[in-house]
Amino acid sequence: MSATQLVVTAKAAKPPRRRWTRKEVVFHVVVLALLVVILYPVAWMLLSTFKPSAQIVGNADLLPREVTLDNYDKALGGIGGVSFWTFFQNSTILAVLSVVGVVLSSALAAYAFARINFPGRTVYFGIMIGTLLLPFHVVIIPQYIMFNAFGLVNTFTPLLLGKFLATEAFFVFLMVQFLRGLPRELDEAARIDGAGHYRTFWSIMLPLLKPALVTCAIFTFIWTWNDFFGPLLYLKDPDLYTLPIALRLFVDQSSAADYGAQMAMAVLALIPVFLFFLIFQRYLVDGVATQGLKG
Image (cartoon, rainbow, N blue to C red; front, side, top):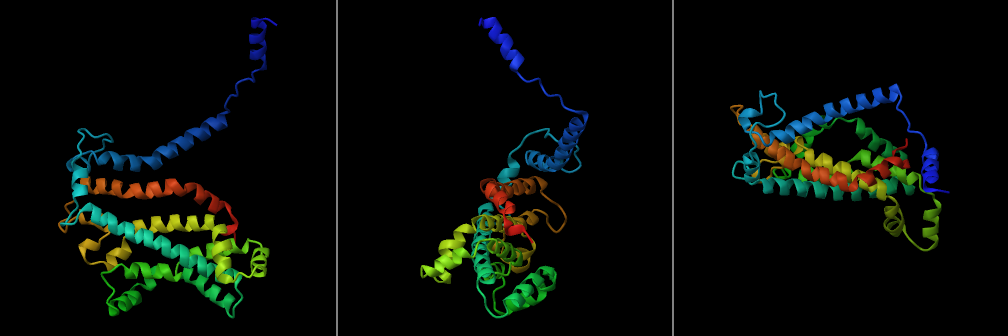
């Protein structure tokens, strides 16, 4: 067969190019329009960090007329005599310890509810689920009075203590549902080999809980990192402030605000959350796809 015939045969064998239907074109246009609407505030905030503060409010231009890095210099320099890295360190300590506390305590509580038969298990589990219906604002005043009586206000303890005591009912429930989907034969095999509850939990159940654990870790990290009300309520010393509280400091009592530095610090505060989610997003998808979210 000649080269010309081979080319003709290849062209004939090539499938015809698929044409988009009108419905598909309309769908993609609508999705792109929604994407622009959703990402516009993010783009505006990011580009505003390169504008002078006077050009941020009341200026309809998305792109900066003149590019400046002064906002990042002010943000990294801190405010009120406290550096940006102090705020960053405080947020990191709270977020990391919260993740450790929630993951460990919720996993232990979930194992007890899902695998151990003890008197009143159903009642206690129902009470725990009932706490999901209790608004956080109902317990604010009693908790503050209690922590103040113990002299724990202006410390990280009120923000972390509950994380290590399995008070996050949503995460306990998620792990309970996940554990209930695991076969009971695993427990029986471990018991035959002489393993107790401690060994069964650490050596068998905990590795299988990995998707649910990572899901809990991601949500806990993001919620704790972005928490504003808790640190505002319990922390009085500026050296203990977190990044969300530091953002508020750029607006003084006379309502004058350094919007440029505020936007720059907001962008810097978003970077750890973005990186954390980027690294563990595939585990989050695995966790959502598992039985752990089934009712």
